[in-house]
Structures are given as structure tokens and as C-alpha cells.
Image (cartoon, rainbow, N blue to C red; front, side):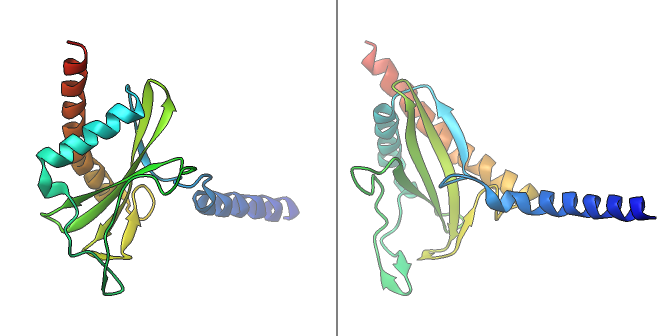
Length: 166
């Protein structure tokens, strides 16, 4: 009987640890969906800027608010020591703001991350990808980001690379 109680205690402990361990993910953006892109961060940022120029529907509208007060979501670095280059996109069809970032892995490879989604133009309704969104909804949002944003940025990047090589 004593062995059985010990076994049950350890089994329940293991289950509890497994269920809560995802709440202790390391890093500033532990749940971000990262895409490694074979290019410098500078060229990737240029491709993103060109994508937003050619597809203005993905730019953030001027109607964004925080607690009812108008605000502007500006991308870029938060300061000289900021490791991430912050980028915001907008899905007009679903009225969602997308938060993403880039950071260099090395001189020839950059991480482009899909971090979270804000429902509506009132900031404060963020849901982290791979954490707050689950299952089919999470997969669907990642696929949408890949199709609408990532693929378009990659096309811009290919164009930039082809014009730089000529």
C-alpha cells in the first residue's frame, strides 16, 4: 500500500509539473513562431518596408487607441540597446493587429518572428501565438501569417537579392 501511495504521489507530481512547465518558458518572447531567413537583418527590414509600401492594406490604420486615447504603433528599435526590430501589420479582413520582430542570428541569417495578435484597434487585447491560441485556431493564424505576410516579404526579398546581384 505504501508503494502504491508513493507511486501515485510521484505520478501526480509529474503530471502537475508537465501541465505547468509551459508557464515557465525562458526568454522575452518564448512562444513566438520564428522563421529563419537566409539574409542580413538590414536587407530583411528593407524587404518588409517594401512589402508594406506595395501592400498598404497591411499598414496599421490611424484609428489605433490605448484606453480610448489615440496612439501610433511605431515599429523599429526601442533604443540603441534593443535587440529586436519591432514590426506591426494589420489584417483588414479580421480587424487584427499583428506584432512581429526581426533579430539577427548572424551576418547572413535573420530570425523573423510572429509574436502575437491584437483583436481590434484598441490595444490591450493581445493573444500570444503558440500560447494563448490553441490547436486549430493557432495553426490557422500561423498559416494566415505565412500566406499573407511571410510569403510576400520573401517575394520582396527575392526581388531585392536579384537586383543587388545584377
